[in-house]
Image (cartoon, rainbow, N blue to C red; front, side, top):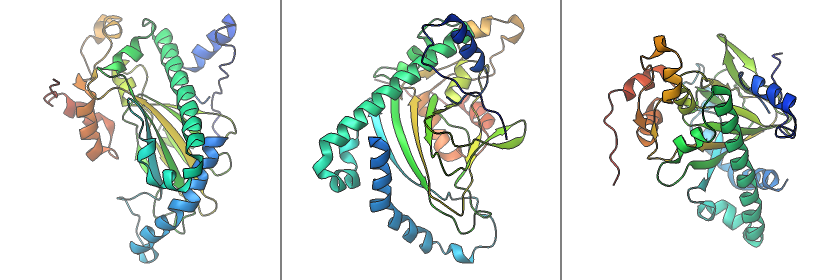
Length: 306
């Protein structure tokens, strides 16, 4: 089994040697109870039967070849920034109407802690790259601040895991992703050196993933990681992924300091674009290679903002 670097951030600002060690680990893909209970209950009571009905309607029992246009997952998305949509999710509001204040408090605390962690990690990346502190946060900011939200995904037991993926292979479009994955049911894999590697469940840990925007801004010094979820026959896997992404109108391009660092690498491999434009393209090409997306953005006319 692949040995994943584990990072403890408790003493990062108090111990010089530990800080150096953490910065070194960040040069590799790194891995570092109310809300969890609420999301599990939400799925069990509100979404599980709906998922079974949808899958039954697709007639998967008769399928013999691999399905390449669907995923064995059910999801819902919570937006935290710039505006929260917690009140717009009917199942949560209806099912837990008596605990509405408790839900909002748990969600707010959950989001605030992960937002702070994401920004701390962005600053660590800046330090590793020799960029000024806050550079990445500023690059993401746009006119209204970053987009920050949480995708809650469930992967129920699958009768034919050899024919359908829990989630097809892709890289994430945005910035930094903080994943709380199921500590009992596995399934997450990442592509390393052409081989799919299992990311084992680890209790009380957060898997840190980098998206396409980090690759562009760092001029490829950090790469977005291709990953997928394998469907399982036993057990329902839950994952809670929080995405700290650029604002819709943020203009994304390689940091000039990283282009100037090596004169022979001055040619700009990565394009300059508005994040919202990239997301429009990503919506149609998510499960394809990222390199054609980057190339396509070189000829996209940028969105104009008022």
